[in-house]
Length: 388
Image (cartoon, one colour):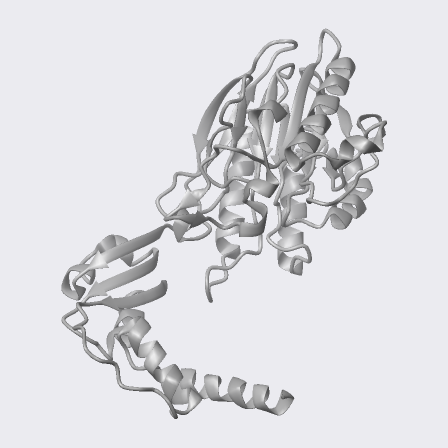
């Protein structure tokens, strides 16, 4: 049985002021083309299809269209679980509407025998899939026989759920089917940091309180399809084939330069699966660059990329921001870097709020704030004053 595993689409996410829906159309079309060229039997999407719980209509339409296309007119099963950015309720509403097309969406954590484990028939046999959406800390789920078991750590609860799903999936798969798990959680040791911070994810959901150990990856399954971590990688410490497929696009500058992919899985009943990556080419690149202006301005690779520039200058450069915007069509951020002499700072006591804001912008960017920016700041300041 051949499976395509993808995750963390985050459809609808913007980068600063830039809408990225054209990129999402491009890369999701590429995923559909890969499903066709690889002639896969099953598609698994392990969470965060949307970037927000209430996605804009264009994002909702694109996800529904893509899932339908992946199902090849209902001839190829597609199974998707909700991530922490998704609405569990939306998934549960969409599921009965899309099930006739071969698409199953699981929003809530459920008992194994009550929808937590699904069976799907493919051209090359049956698959039993444990479906484990994102589980929020503090949510007591009526899942285990003894409710007292729910008062352990988050990691313990995750392990209990995956163990129960694996047992049920193996039972339903029998000797001839393939047992799988699709899940959205963090395993301790996974690479999440880019430049020292979580990438494209909510920091609240990336800490130790929301992580499980590798013991939460059952050893009885042929493959575990994971989501939540945007960097493509094997699940650390897993004793069976288990992969974080990673996000489809470079979602922020913490992911700059990262090669995105989908995972192609070949699985047989009762055996560990084999996996390989198929690289994605869709989407605009993100580049962080540092240097003198004359050098940066000559770089062809920065013209068509989203760029975060640090320009080395001899001192404050009031025209830097405007010059950078004119030269780089997809500029996201620019700042000046120069040696600052150690001098006594003048007292700012008594300065007006807009003067303080002007000084702040100059210190941060090396440039005078534009009149429109100062005007917007004064408008917000006036509004805040009226509400006091």
